[in-house]
Length: 120
Image (cartoon, rainbow, N blue to C red; front, side, top):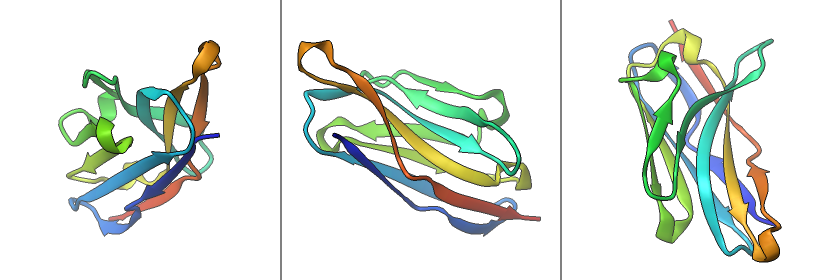
């Protein structure tokens, strides 16, 4: 089973920046799409940004122009650079990876989450 380990969360003032990292390890053929999701207090988990293995990215409207997703396929790692942070960006950020296995036994793996708190 592939494990995802996130890091980089913390407390920051509005207007500040944070960079999240998520590293995948374990037995796999490769990783297809990777993404970051956010779950704010009392809210559902929503997509923030995703990126294909080839580097094509997709963003939630609320973060366009402020967040940048990137990945290093050699390291099985995805990053989320978050700039101009707002209090509304507060939440637990989860990394997700679509893991490709033999015999098409592919599955989605989730990280444990990292807390991001933006103070006003």
